[in-house]
Length: 301
Image (cartoon, rainbow, N blue to C red; front, side, top):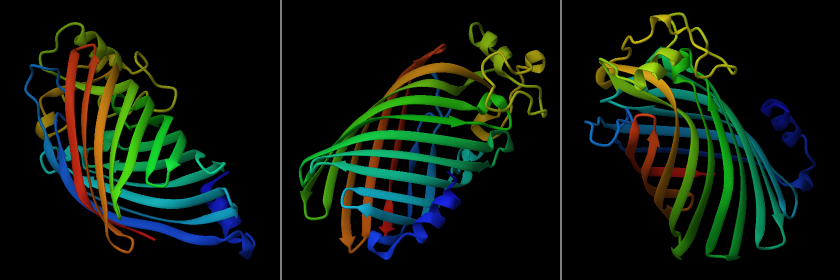
């Protein structure tokens, strides 16, 4: 069922079903380290970033324990020191929250978006699916666990990635309007890595298999994967800035991420937030670490 049809059904629902507009806006800034996923012991590159997002949708409560919503969203990010990663994205999301008793809820979410990158080779559609079990033993504490799948396709296939993630988190209200959280995620899938020129084995073999013909966009699409690109012209660096002298290739990876979070309501639905993520993982080229921090303000309605 498309998001447009869902919005229409929600708007046509009976008044007693409690239909309401929902939305949010926000902006923040931070830093992302090791944007090239360089292996441990190698030089790494990072960049500051500025981010903004907005969403508008319709929520419907057909019963005391059920909430449905559908909406449209925008998000963007600007990386001054890694401009190839700067992007704008527009998408749609669906959400279903089903309470089971007073303590447990099941949450299912699905979304899709199209991303436009400063480097057009990275632009393309993506989807995300998520299922979460939420337990609130007390009003001030929420425990979550679940599974998420994401897939992104790019104009040049080497930038198409996918992941399967198992996650869990604990969030507690430590004072009125102030929340602290801690999350952990285990993820496996295919990511884009970068090798310096000249490329050595076994990275060279992966590079040759996954690098499409220059400018053709060959091999892009849902059915692509390692070995499906036209690798005859592989091995040419592409991109600019920190990516200028690097050859992209795609490889399987497994990583772990720990994320502490902070949120504080400062006036009605206006809030401040901060989060920090530390990731450690491994690929064919070796182990790597990456860090990501973001802080800012948002407003929900």
